[in-house]
Image (cartoon, rainbow, N blue to C red; front, side, top):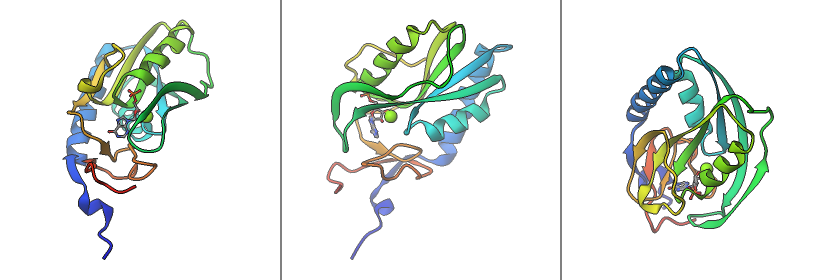
Length: 181
Ligand code: IMP
Ligand code: MG
C-alpha cells in the first residue's frame, strides 16, 4: 500500500511556531530600518514563502526582487559551484538590501551572492535566513536575522524542497535519511 509521504515526515516547526517567529523577525527588521526603505531579495525558489510572510510582517517601505542560483543538484548534496541563473531586475546601488534565503547551510550560496551584491554598492546589506545549519558551514558567513538554528538534518516544507517536492507543506518537516526519491 502507498503511504502518503506527509505521514512519514516529522514536524520540526509547526506553522504556528513559524508564524510567531517570523512576526518576531519582522519586528526586529521594523525596528532596525525605522523610517527607511528596504529591498528584500529572495533567492528562488526556496525563499518564496518565507519572503511572502516576512515582507508582510515588516512595517517599513519594502520592495522585492528575486534572483535564482543553481547550487544544489537534485537531492541532498551540493555541487559546490554557484551560478547566477536569474539576475536582479532593479539596481540596488544606494539601497538597504536584505537577502532572504530559506536555509543557510554550507554558506556557499550566500557567500557568493553577498560578493555579487556588494559589487553593486548597496547602502547596506544584511541576510535573513529562515533556518541556519551552523554545523554544515564551509564559508564563514552568518545571517543577521535567523528564524531557527537547527542541527544537521535535511528539512522540507515552508518553501523548501526535496527534488522539487514538499515546498507547499505549511510546517517545516524532517525528511528521514532513507526517504526514497
Ligand atoms: P548552501 O550554499 O550550502 O548554504 O546552500 C543553501 C541552499 O541549499 C538552500 O538555499 C537550500 O536551497 C539548500 N538546502 C540546504 N539544506 C537544505 C535542506 O535541509 N532542505 C532543503 N534544501 C536545503
Ligand atoms: Mg535555496
